[in-house]
Image 1: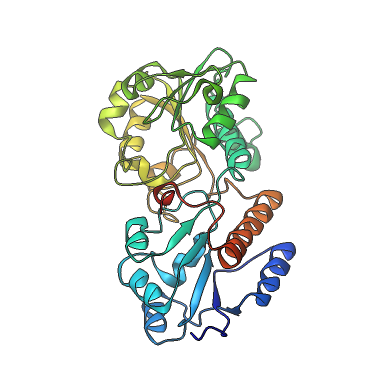
Image 2: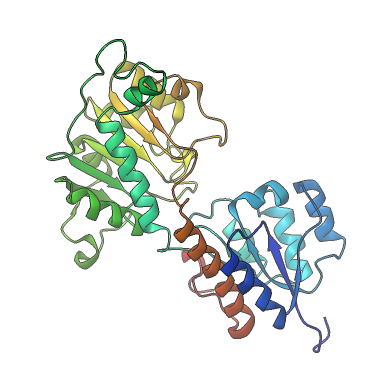
Length: 338
């Protein structure tokens, strides 16, 4: 690219909100806005290698764009880096679709969308927790079948008041959930890799992983997916939990072994579960689909108009900052010092 040439700005996936679309269009003052022609990972890699993206400096991506690009790793990262990509703004708090070490090695800076997603995701976790505790799913099904409360009275659920909520991964989402759970009369313990500053913990008790498993009436998974958290909850962990525990997952499906969860539900070890994410999305384990006591949502954690609009606008601002200032506003933690 000659010094006078404008850089290319690549949009991977679609923007849904008018304000974000207008903001993206305004980036045309800083570069040439482009989109891929490909519709699958094989063709996208070929398009990268064809020179179509040569001169690209910044790109934004959505969670669903993985259907076009495949995971951002290996050959794809290498090809994008050779095309000139320096900045990748991801629309989401979790970024497990992106291989950060590969991007770092290729000199590609990556950002995510922290904090904006916290309230909506925590609201989703509270909804799932209440539904699972109160055993509301079966009555909902019966009512829509025209049976009102069912052929037999629905089983009683449990009050949240007085229960212990164990938060595994108390980042922004976990801290927001803590605040809302305490309003319901729950006490909160948590486990992170490192204990939080008291100003962030705000009274939540820091415990070991094993203590959290043993002490909690409800366990909420709020941690990122990586090699160390894959199946962090599996059969041995369920054995350490209280009988009748409730499990909530709004993080990523593979942090929990779904087959082990199904067995724990069937044995009665787990009273119920509330899930927004699944190990092989969009496929859901049949043992979960067949269990009418489990609360299931199709990955709706941030699915509010307000939150998604803010997320899209934040991604555009990350791209703008990269082009105008040479840095991303919210780099992923692994690249803080890059």
